[in-house]
Image (tube, rainbow, N blue to C red; front, side, top):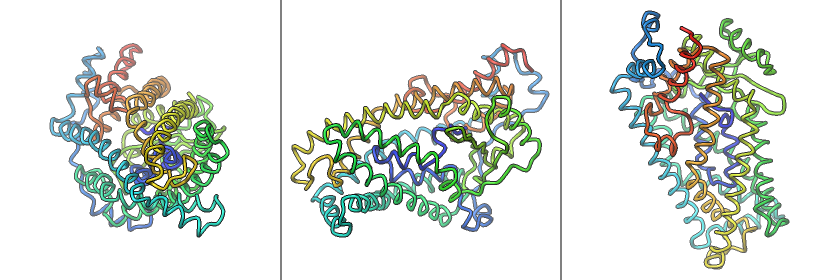
Length: 454
């Protein structure tokens, strides 16, 4: 169940100005996107068939479901075969290490660009090509996007394609998958070139207060990216079209109109040509909204679709995108404050050796990336908790709107394909940006018990 805050890779690409996620943001788009330009039928035909499964349940099983929330939760979790749980645990726990490897690799990219004054030499070359500061910084931003992409490509291939194939969730062959990565790189180059030029122009004027005005600029670019992504970026990876199933369309629109969400259609996108994961989102800001669900979700039952879309509508109705922006602004602001302190110290010690002329020098961007990424890595539990809290809010909103506790529980079981179902409390606090399967099903069963529904 995809929250509004993470609906677009473009937003992540823009934030990469501060966080150094540029090399990973474009591949992240393929988690929910599929290329329509690369023989989708051939890709689907050669995709591995997923062995993940949940023991089926019928109306008779649901009729016997205990009324007690704890007992009903256990009954749902017992439908997960031991091999499915083991696979899910292995996949999700492996992601803990991948967070570390991505962080360390990002530091390595910054080190490669700084040592031997490589970044400074690239800056000088960009200055010769673009004779004004704005053009020089834009060229450097484009270089950084390409260099980061190339240097992290081996890990991206393992994480985004090999590993997804190993766990039978990827449905693309390598060729179409790589085309998506090239598309993502193109988006990253454009956004980072524009972002770097604007960001460093502001830094030069702000001087010692660059951390404050840098936050303002970063958030402005974040909002811009969220606005343009649904119309300019997402269609690069997916085909979007109105849902043709009248039952699904009428059910979702009825829930949207009940809470005055300003939509008159429901859209589907063909993510099944890339992944087996179910996904949906309600995107839009400043009075606009678009309700979108992927074709994997459309293959589930109507109660599951209603439950998932009730959750997604909850994000929109409760203004989670604006709350996210406020929280992200505070995270970026604190990160820039940390970066100012760290960069001032590092530039005093190593700036001359690296050929850097201060924090407002675009050649120092790899250093900004390194120190800000360190801050974000250390803040992972806090950031995850901020997201997870709103996901729980949307879960409970969706239960009240859709009134489908069993549909919600069934959808939660399907998400176990890639999310550990029953973590410990500390593990969930540190690593989970969504509630665990047990947490979500228990919430649904508590609602069922309290409301007395079947």
